Image (cartoon, rainbow, N blue to C red; front, top):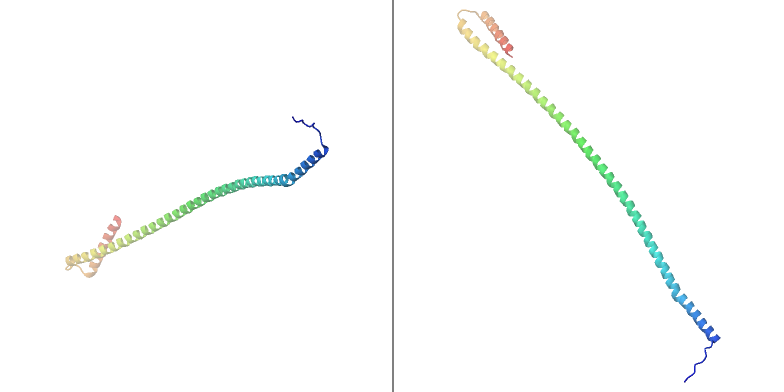
Length: 171
């Protein structure tokens, strides 16, 4: 059997192990811990920047939304104003057209009345001339033997006045 050596502490081995541990710690810290820490800090900064950008984008979107809603309400108000203006313009134009139509109708009516009066006067004149002509012929035939020319004219004039008075009374 083999005998076990007694556990003993070797100071130099311990110092050497501690020194190896310290060197290993420094190497791990320098080459592993520092880059990982730096990478984590960069990642944290990137995430914070993304959160800030997202928050800024959200604020900008809300601001744009409010601006859009304001523009939309302004556009609706402007559209309402334009519609109201168009309606007023159409009403004014309608009134103008109606007034022009009434004026033309009145002009046509006045012209028709004047034309009717003129035709009436022409008809009266024609009738008077025909009555005078017929009366003259009849009176001439009847009185040809009994009247002279001056009596004949007086009789025709009185007949015309009588017929004209009766006709004007019928108007």
